[in-house]
Length: 466
Image 1 (cartoon, rainbow, N blue to C red):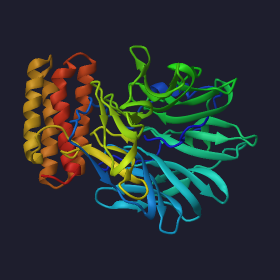
Image 2: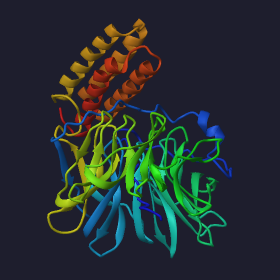
Image 3: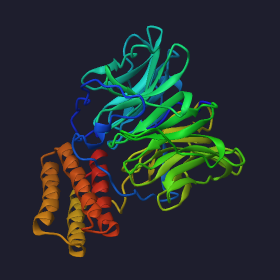
Image 4: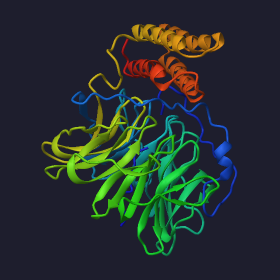
């Protein structure tokens, strides 16, 4: 019972970076244990939960590459969207969509088929396709284009399905006997084949910056379970909701895992783990079944669930407990696959007539929270929010100056028409505020207005406002 291989996991404002690929090691059961303490390539931009407004979420048709249909699988914090589309010639090609350039075909010559599965915030796209008659995973970067990850020795096929900001790529490789094994690549020649729960099938679909991997593994009796691989530890069975089968699709920086699991009535239900220490049913829009595909660092979950009429609808489960039907392009069904830090959600949905199209969902305010305004106005409001947070917390003068300095840098960069540098400064500010929350210098409630305004300013800069 192999469910959809597609899963959703660059910051457009940041320069492209080389994937951190070096060394060669192979572990039989888990990701590299040294990975847990390895330095990251810059700060992790974890943010608070984005606040959605039910009824204000709009669905946008991203089009196709000339053919009848398209599907979006991943979106990063810069708003880059990746997926697969039918071309005018009838081929399935990987695409990259941006607000400025629209949908672009990124499939290299020599590939008869390709689909992009995920994109990192530093501009790395991963996926898989067919080249020279072989199924191969690929990595795409603006500087290099589409490059095959190759097929490791003793294996017959490879698929890249997820990518971490720190450079690791996850996916699966196939043996000559037809088995599939979860894998983490550090480079095309450096990889770790992950352990299973005893069966001949495992699949790694998502990885966070701590090197923790979510996916699916078969048991010895061929049942499949959602699993978590931690660096230096054996594979962990996450269980079910009372049935026999489950599978994991997404993981965030807090190691929350989402996916699907059978309940005692053998219905496929969307889950989040851990929730109060165990797998929890997220609920549906009134129907029996659903699946959760991705969870943001703020705890918002996206996927699909049945409504009371039995239609499969694109669904958002918010961190504060709401279940929201995202709507479609006019048809009865849709599927959400990924969500970014600024509240943009991607997937695909049916129009009133015709085939499915890649779809972008966002709040009517363009993905930011708050009442709008120009970038200079938002930056001014951000400075005031920092003043309020400082007054409520326990800070030293240099910490206060450090936060305000990042706002001042953003202001100068806006004046000099350098929005990318301004966005980078604001993202570091978000990271710093989250550290203050983690160390107890300020509460989450006190920090949230600062995070929200910084996110809104970033979105305004990305949209070219102000």
